[in-house]
Image: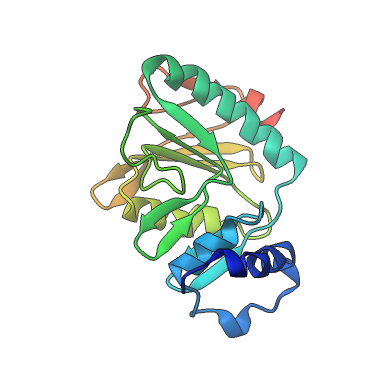
Length: 204
């Protein structure tokens, strides 16, 4: 389906009422073009896999406070070294037909060709803050997805048990690099020398 200017108001209306729509009948039929058009007209986090869309919960203030601490820490490290870091909502293509919206994502080079205006076609590091509504999404599903995308490092920031788990890609799956708790700093294997205090993150 090609989205033209004539049907833009329809997409805006759908985007504004997305949580009130029964998506069951439409699941499996959404095209990538429809997904991109829909997400271009809402600030809700919506992910897409092979015709199925998933509307994620609205972030809480605590979630956003944690995200901000991490974003500023990553930016302070990668910017002077020529890298770039961003935060949701920003679409990330896992593969053709699959999109995620990580809480944080970064590239080591700001001129990386995978950095596109509509959506990124890859990343060097992504981070997710575990949502209480469905922890398995961040703990089990997304490690598979980000490994499929070939992303070298994945941070799982879990307010439920106050841990930061850093996973690094080994072949086609992730291996644990470290599980960091209060009283220590979480470290990156990819970003040599980068560290952030776990207490600072969860006290945000």
